[in-house]
Length: 68
Image (cartoon, rainbow, N blue to C red; front, top):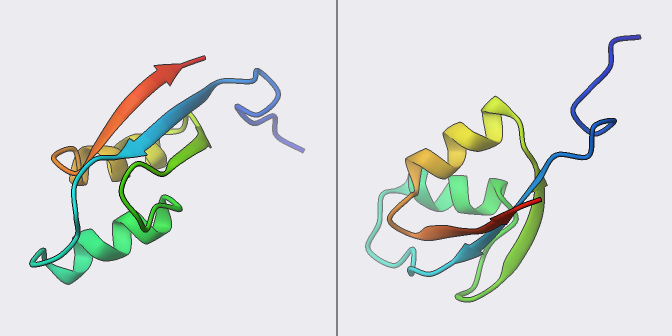
């Protein structure tokens, strides 16, 4: 099996700072994919290129609190 980034323990903590109201459907779905659905909720996510791309897509609605 191939090793993943979870073995190295790289994570990002993301907090939702903006509302998905009056936003395109794809941005709403990206927030849901990140596990965010209400303001000021935080999620600890793996630091992968896919997650980084999702964060970049909704960068005006979220902030990265810390990268452990």
